[in-house]
Image (cartoon, rainbow, N blue to C red; front, side, top):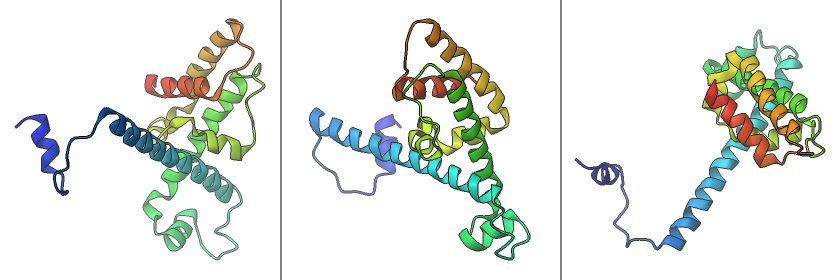
Length: 171
């Protein structure tokens, strides 16, 4: 069975005429935008989870633990601590970015801005490196130091995201 046949196996839609390259690029761009939206949403969620956990929101609401709170309020008790791992990993990565881009005037340390940047990382990638955030930090700092010594005065968001994504891949 060829690759094309595998694709057809999973399609429940009626056959459509082939797309032209321009329309395919447009659809790909919209898909990429949607994926970026999901990554940003993960980053926003991680920041809010971190803040809620730090504030121990479960106590005044009468819950005995973070897990019990997340189970009752959101139906995700099994994932409650995974969300914290994502939040911690994102916080550690931001720390590396903030420390590594000291010469940059474009970096914003506001948590909302950090969440919006999101570094283009998926929840899966953040979970995968959550226990090795110090390694990601060191990798990122080394790359940022290289950029700083190359004479760049400011790193744009795309460069920062690329450095962070590469550090995560390397780890």
